[in-house]
Image (cartoon, rainbow, N blue to C red; front, top):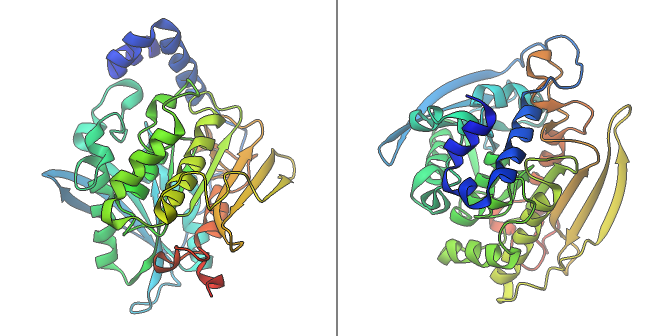
Length: 366
């Protein structure tokens, strides 16, 4: 199917309302995603731990998943769990290869879960092939749709391995990033912190290609409402490229602001404070031979880290700093800093029981 025809079919009325320019925008994005990536080295050796496959039945639908157990794992010793959620047109197996979380897990001692979509999602046409159903409002809610399935797969792995229940984290890219924003709102009692990469805020999928979407104040309130009696501060990390045509940087930036605003609603009912919406600190970095990037840190009144953003200058819609295997060159930009390392550096600060005022960071809690 031609990209323009595919976008008309798969996005239906949304593109009908926005007309041909929006469809052409998606065409450009899909051609970019299909284009060869940066020249890379030879295929990498597999990590030495164990990959296990499993399935869960969630609301009557079967979902497959994979999880990686590092050699350093000790039964009975509770390990952290990182849930890595893939985007459209990719699979759990590909996310495992692309992200390089397994290699980091060997050194840091955490388990990694790679959830996958169900058969109906795998069969979706065109750009929505293998895609989480972020278009469906049922998937924005606790106990239904893909949000429930991701939570069910997470609990399944927690039952199979000794996992610290307060140290479960979720990172998602693109459509998986939209699901990360959803999980933070629908399951704040399950995930201690989340990372949203090359994506957007809760229920804000219309930011795709437009850079606009719904007002961030609306998204923040909707996320807080979804939290309900489980409301708590969920520290939020974002990463994306400022040459991304699928989810422009403004979308990824909104995901962080929404997380901060929702945290403020949890604390005292106001979106604008006490956690400032402006960064406490910014620094520039440069990957040798690669992209420059800007890191901004957002701190609560006690000086503890509540949010963090990584803007990769010149990067398009790719996983940053992933595998060098040429088989995945169309999915990762090796000129970017490692998204796996950056997210883990953020995640390891938090315990679910500690992410509340005063001081969100567990190791600095008074």
